[in-house]
Amino acid sequence: MAKLLQVDFDYSGPFGEEMAGALAGLATSINQEPGLIWKIWTESEKDKLGGGVYLFEDEASAQAYLTMHTARLQQMGVAEVRGCIFDVNETLSAINNAPLAAANNH
Image 1 (tube, rainbow, N blue to C red):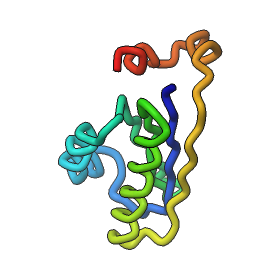
Image 2: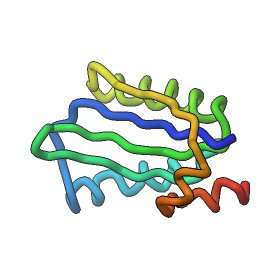
Image 3: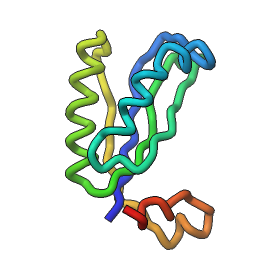
């Protein structure tokens, strides 16, 4: 069963296109993470937050990524990483056009 991982942390930038340019290599490497289906990058310049919402094939993949990503962010100086793994209610999510078809193809 697919699992959704939500991560956020204090982040002072860069944001927008500058962030996209600076982190394109990281974004490409994330596609190689075991069990990853997709990621949506999140940012709030106003609130000084960065993060993402990820869909993984299973809980073990989501947990392994959260553990690795937390350590990576801490090495980059991020003091606190907030991460939570959720079950996905596919029936209700489908009503709201959630991109879950890719999850069922894995």
